[in-house]
Length: 595
Image (cartoon, rainbow, N blue to C red):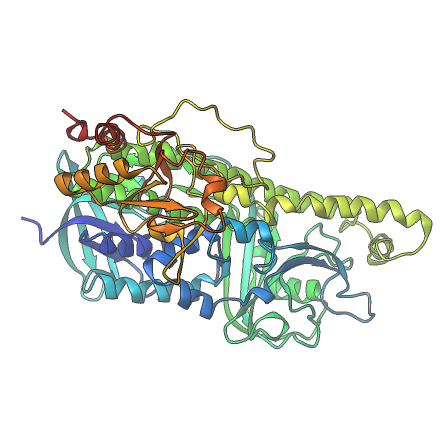
């Protein structure tokens, strides 16, 4: 007999693990989370939270505290490039170029149309405590830090894991139907024989987390990320400076992180004194002696797990894919790995879905993870080429590099071409800071999606331009609705572990069919009518009408992860049979097919 029996064991207490715990608790599924660390992460790594991620946290009730603790939108409107930070002349610290940053501080209409949530920016060291506190409220006694996962054994019915309480070295076993590996690829993936595939050791990186008052040198409160190209150094990318808050942002930020990058094997990367000297040189502040919180080192890589499921063990987040931080895709991809899998596990635990539904996790998420890795690598390489466009190198003297830099500000006719060339290079960075379609535009293709025979759309641009659609596999488009003085985002009516069927005027048959199926099968299925002038919710701004792509008698079925599962363009002679067949296919459950 195992010491503990639980439907789901979660190994790892970072964003992926804590989000999984919260989601399963909200779905009524018991789980146990173990993390070998005594507390949440002390590494100030991930900080960008996409709109789609914030929709998940909005559903879980943690969006508001994240916004409250995070960067105000007016302090994250731009990213910019500077000639260092300070120095003996006014040219040091001068701005070279800037770009809108992920929705331009919640002012870009394209991003506003995409979601009811704005982007957020909150360092991992402050995000995880919020998630942990809420996970403990939702799952009392089910969050165990300082408990190490040791090993696992699988059989056809589940997983038996050996856990150690590090406080007293006591070991105990946990019997679970499913195990979620959210441990960053440290142990679980290796034990089940999964390989990580892709380029490794691309560069040696050092992150310095410190407290200091930089307000006398740093300007531009609207800029979030500062890319520093100091001619005295000559590297294509000398360093990156990012404010950390916690109480003030922009130039008044109390804490900062500074990122340095070295070639793999460069001994300077492992020497604290050399790292600090390099930071002073890049900033241009020779006598800079901040309060150091942590100097952390990490290797840049772009790798994807060969498998995301082995038996009853699943890999999520950094266990499934690890990539450069450029683009901020790591944490966000992890959250949606979890969001994709947890509703499927809930359906399987309740007996509403067959095991084959769980196979669709890998089928759907592995391509998304691989694309995130590829996009991150492309963003990383593009930063290097942007700096190289100027022609500054460490081999040149500082004065030679400054002569190149001054062309960007010169009024001389011959400088025009240099400015145009550099502006073109900076414009390509929109691939990182305006990649809305990477966030929203991916689609799923698996047995848990019912195709409708329509061809895949020809996209205007597969990185920057998000084109909402209800084609099966797509993300549910955003629309504002209202009724009786209440304003509601359509995405808030979806999620919460339930299917949502949306129909229009003349869709009464679909509403009745959904009610019968929900009652008889015990499925979490809600049906609503949405119309401009009548129905459960009013679409008087015509947001949904513009995007629904079916008639007022048709229907759109949304999965619990807010991806479109199926749609029907018009009325059905037998809506109940039609809907049962669609749900049966999505859930891989033949019992739902009408007899």
